[in-house]
Structures are given as C-alpha cells and as structure tokens.
Length: 193
Image (tube, rainbow, N blue to C red; front, side, top):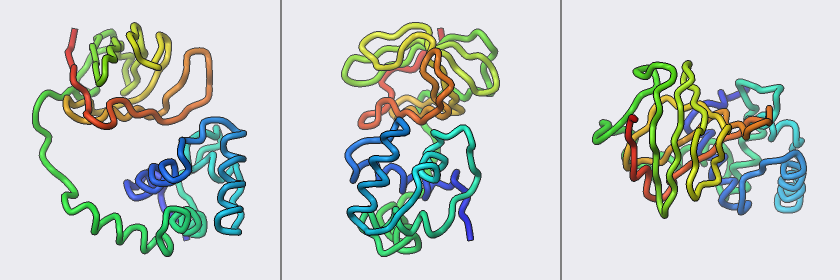
C-alpha cells in the first residue's frame, strides 16, 4: 500500500525527520548520510533514491510512497509507526484549519510581471517577480540566502505566516527542493509593488 506524498501528514513527517536529523538533506551525499543514520539508529535500510523522491530532490519524482518507508521514518522520529505518527500528529494539532485573515496574496490573482516585496525576521527583504503558473523568480535580495535568479512555486503568501516555497531552484541549477522563509514569525512584509 502507498500514500500520496503531497498529504500534509507526509510533509509533517519530513519536517520532523529533518528536526531529529538536525538538517534537511539537500544533496545526494546528504541523502546517503541520512540513510546511514537511519541504518545505525533503526537497523533498517531505505535507499537514498527513495528518500530523494520523497523529499522532491530526484528528477524521477513520485506521487506515492510505501507504508514501509513511512513506518521506518515514523520510528526514527519516535512513533511506533506511520499510523501512530498520524494519531500523534492529530492529537498534537487540535486546530486543523482556520480562516485566512490579514494581508494575503494568491498567485492566481496576479498577472505575469507583477512584483512583490517580502520580508521576514530578522532583517530579510526580497523582491520577487511573478512569472505565471504559480512561479516566481527572485529579483532582489537583502540579507537573505535567497539570491537573484532563484525561482520557486507558491500559491498563497500571507503576512504573519511562514512562506513555503515549492519546487525551489537555485539560479543556474535544475535541482528542485523545498524552502521555508520566516518559519518562526512568518512574513513581516508583504507588499504588491
């Protein structure tokens, strides 16, 4: 049996694995090191290519992941398995949804060429340009690890919430990953220019 990788529970599991591991795997060698860590901790083997697909690093993407893989990763973060991880997640997250409030921008309401200025703590300011089809490119960056030419997909940007970037690509690279900006305090600046 397989589970779709775009489920929120799978995203939460990836984030908890990164927390326990101490970082997000971002290179092929990073995924090999994570495999070695899992082997040492649990005496169970997952292939680096499976983990690369789960994290969206591999160009041979997948839409679903096996329960066995999710069980192993769930045990790594302290749960008995995938079902237990989901039950704990539900118990720890009493508010599962809420209405959006405050300033927000949705990408389908933008026209290509529109620029946005984004900011988050402590002093990060980035100007991005909307390219169409939920895709943005960084045009200017102050004090941020995002650099001009980096690109990403994002449907919803909301002041006071973290900015989750999907299909994030460094300028000049074809490798895609995920990126979060303003994880602790959310966006402090969201302005359509």
